[in-house]
Structures are given as structure tokens and as C-alpha cells.
Image (tube, rainbow, N blue to C red; front, side, top):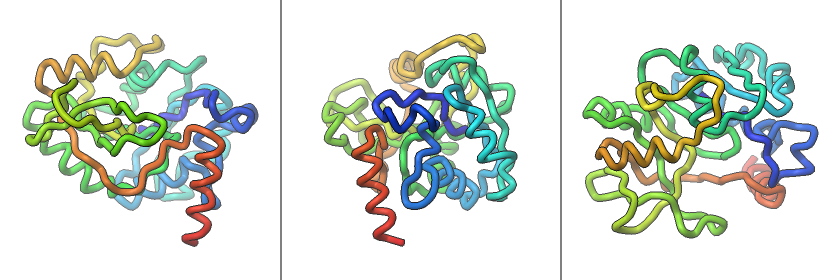
Length: 226
């Protein structure tokens, strides 16, 4: 699942007329970078939620066949936050653990190997497995602690930032009502308290494309590479 329902307030005025995941970097929309990497990893069945200007996502991406994917959409009248959006899309996601990626980040991750490690942890009883990154300048306090065994903790060591990439059991969202706003953090903290949230430190290229300035810098970087 690619999360694409956010309004992107910090990106205004760019997002006044374009969904944030459709903003271009390196010659293509941010969300297309994700779709291409997911397909290369063999993850071709993709669900995308949307709210603000969601019709533009549907019109541009279609059924996903342009990239060898099968895309289905989960529309929201108003953005339902991360957990609310996932809970609403559960009927499209099935009964097995699934990968979720924030549509407004750029991430050079090998999704196939990440998912393989995540599923191994989830089959050991974890509710979710998250990719954590070094704290960016705009979020120096981080989100979680990662212990030596790969468990995520609230505190007690060096903190890392949640990348927006994770694999989840559907059961994590079972208590939520479809169509109702709900944040992800309370669910993650409950899993931490139960000792059922694992993670890993991703050290590859990752960017939270949260401002026009960061988008411009990423665009320049990717164009330089091409």
C-alpha cells in the first residue's frame, strides 16, 4: 500500500493543484519512483489511498499496467490519517502481512529483501516490522529506539526516525472502524509495550520530501545522476 491521501500543507502552494505524491523529482512523480521499485521487487499488487485531488492520481496512474503493476484505489472523502487509511483499505489488502510506504518520501530501498526480513520477524510473533533511518535535520529527536536484538523500544538508547516504510499484520488494525480517522502511533506504542514491534536501521538514500526546498534539492540530485 502506498499512502497518498495527505494534503501536504508544508508543500503549498505546490500542492494546491497537485497531490503531493505526484510532485516531480528527477523527471518523474515521487509515487512513480515507488511503483517502479515495488514492481522490480516483485510486489505488483498495489493499493493507493487518496483524498486531496485524488482524481489526479487515478487519472495518471490508471490500473498500473504502464509499469507492470495492478493498482487499486482506496478513496477517502477526507484524509483519515495513516492508521485510518490503512484500516479503510483492509478489504483490498487481504489477510496476509503487507508492505506500506509513505507516498511523500523518496527511498532507494530493496523492497524484496526488506520484506523477506520483515516476514521472518512477523512469523516470530511481531505485529509489524519498521525501517528506521538516521534522524534528519528537521527531526533531530527521532521516534524510536532500536535494541541490539531488533526490537523497537520507546526509549533507553539512541533514537532513530521512522522512515514511513513498514510491514504490518492486518490484526494490528482490527480494532479500527473503516472510514474513521486514526493515527498510527498509538498502535505502534501498544505493540512496543507488548514486545511485538521489530525494526531495522536503513542506511540507504532516504528523504522526507516535506518542503519545496527539499523537493528542489532532491530534484537537482536525481537530475545530476541521470
